[in-house]
Image 1 (cartoon, rainbow, N blue to C red):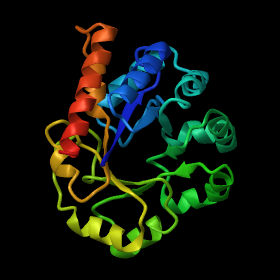
Image 2 (cartoon, rainbow, N blue to C red):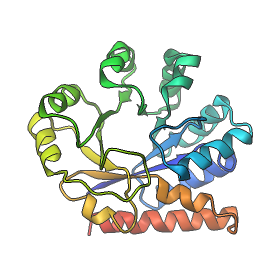
Image 3 (cartoon, rainbow, N blue to C red):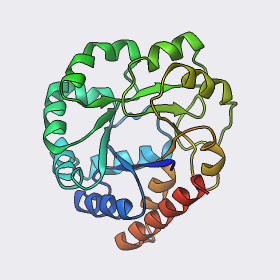
Length: 246
């Protein structure tokens, strides 16, 4: 069974909505949830997720909101924190790790923390048995792939193309998938540009898909009520889960 990881922006439109949406996504078949930490300069994300980030920040998002949401949902659905390094550095990695361990958060996804720099924190993550998710790109050499995936935990995040999330681009991924398979048995998930139309094709050869912009795009629709947003996103999640396993 291929896995579905869903990204949502914490605190958009508010923290109670985030909790309700997370629990609905669990019922819709989502296997893991990325709680996005709003940041003013999300360099790996496209305009859809950037807009949600900025809205949450304008509404007054605080790290305490992330903690409150995580405490409520992590016992119910496998939860990861996705954010850029600045907030982790500013508050301290240990602060986040201690709280993550307390709530049951299973991993961190930090797209602007290169593998080499992440090595400094490896012992702290391993001590608390929390995964720091590794990234693989189509531009990585075989030697670099071998280096990155050697000690990978939970799953490997393979980006579908060089660029930002939410775009519709295609690159040949077979060589990358083959290189990863030769080096590790850690599950390989694909993200960037995965939606209802592309999920089935992009799921070929990998163990799961990561979907963000397709869900957040619904969050941004001002003509929908909160309950309609939850229903629409959950319906989309069910559809994608069925497609990748069809």
